[in-house]
Amino acid sequence: MLKKSLLLATSLAATAAWAQAPQPASTPTAQTLVLASDSQRFAHDRLLEMARFLGKTQRFGVALRINYDAVQSDGQKIEFGEVRDVAVARPNRVRVAESSSDGSNSLMLFDGERITVSSRDGGSVLYAQTVQPGDIDATVVHYVRDLKLRLPLAPILMSRLADELQRRLTAIDYVERSSLNGKPVHHIAGRTAAVDFQVWIADDKKPLPQRIVITYKTEVGQPQFRADFSKWNLSPNFDKATFRFKPAANSSQIMFAVQVPPELIDTRGAPTSAKGEQK
Image (cartoon, rainbow, N blue to C red; front, side):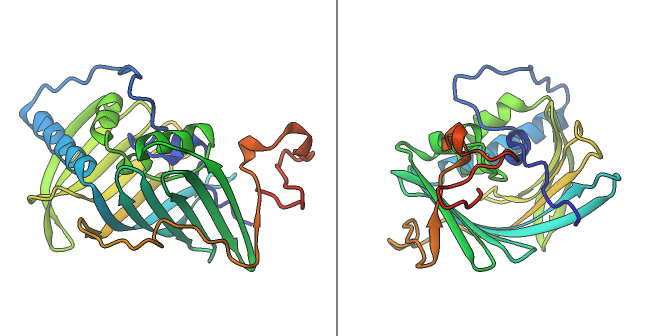
């Protein structure tokens, strides 16, 4: 069977700020970004304008169509995809629902008190929960860095997105003003130590990201991650059920891998619950 996983390591799953796991706010900048030309400064301003706008937006919903390369053992790249619906209510509510190209579904939910992750593959439904007080920024860091779970474009959920981008950027420049889906956009190209990225940002009073392409330049085969944003809603009416998790009747609760004691790790290195389900 063709390998599907796109570099599920945490450092690649959270993508550029985007492509590295979000770090605590006290983490120092690794490199100094030099802006030597007008186009570089303009690109930098537009990128941070987008990041600050999104970070200050208190509530939003957006749909993402994601495609990514999975490099096979023989070097061939195979594209897989997924659709994600994201709901954010600051300071402490997040819902990310995913439908993958193979028909499986997953959910990441933060209700201000706990993180819940649920996965459905065929008739099997598994979920795990852990206590997590605090805001979205702290939760994203804990989710990606400590629980070591995949959350593509995790930094766009954070209020400090601009700081995350600024900390990682090593180069940036303006490509062109173009059109995407009939709307004017700024096309910007940037680099971090781990990735090259391109982002298309709406050229209007709401400078929201419209498309992102990321190339993992240090990985074998230099696979790409691509995400198109649609259905932006900056004043959604979330009901009480949006951020509430109700287990299905046929679901089974398991532990996160990092919570599993060593004696419950099988010989293949896969954590199991008391009932034997793998996570």
